[in-house]
Length: 388
Image (cartoon, rainbow, N blue to C red):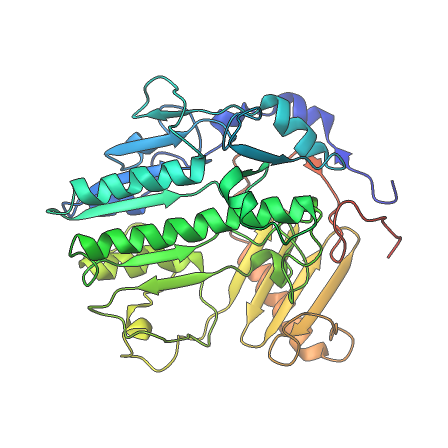
């Protein structure tokens, strides 16, 4: 390989079990904040914030949890599923023989969901809405779709008969199932008379990865999941609350997932904890039209020594390996094609200083990483690597 995978074997031998890697129980979650305000709190789906009893949702503020225990959407030999395997991807090759089709409820025994996973989670989310319509509730629906392993329901796959590429067709079917989930949940809120005074937020955790082998999946943005280019860190972020938020707005300034906690706290009138400063901001004044623009602030990303900062129109990416910096003007160049680090020395110095000052007080990682892998910015995993 031109760019090898690097493994620190000493660290690997000391690494904790995957289930031990998660959110420390002493942290305050949105669910805990809302539960203290009288909300019934429910989690459905993916967690990946630790699977020890102390880290699972029931001990992080959730009254109920329908917990995704593994990662299949249906058994691989089920007549109602269509699979797409990416044999060029070592992670994908690992997933197929090791993933199972199973969930649990409130820490009980595993059981098989009653249908294709995305539709099953949606069915259960609708049940939660209907059963809790007469009291305040918080539902965190964390869909697994459209994560690998790529599996579409046969009905969704058949809806894309005009798509000749099998992998792309499966992926489209999976997206269709998430679209349908959003539609059904919003329709349920309307039917139950809850639409006006329910805050719905739809967002994602990252852009799509290059290990799907779908070159256009993040277009027009450059990069993938596991990179700090816009294709990796840009995600949908939509809020709907007819009683409070005028429809059709677009916020010109970038906002972040870290803004969810202060925004939801403001929505329910809950004070933020004084003993732990939060980096996020309350977006309600912007969403409600009471503020003209978001407060100016830098946004940061960090994956070990791979780091980035965005301030206004400028974004700096620092990669310790291969020892490279990129500076982009996102107003003129939102797809990050023109590196300005050579002709903007003052901006470069300012953002370097920002990154350093942001990093300096950070604690060491609770679980140091032991593997480093290259991710090509402009190529999918199945395309040949080149030295540049």
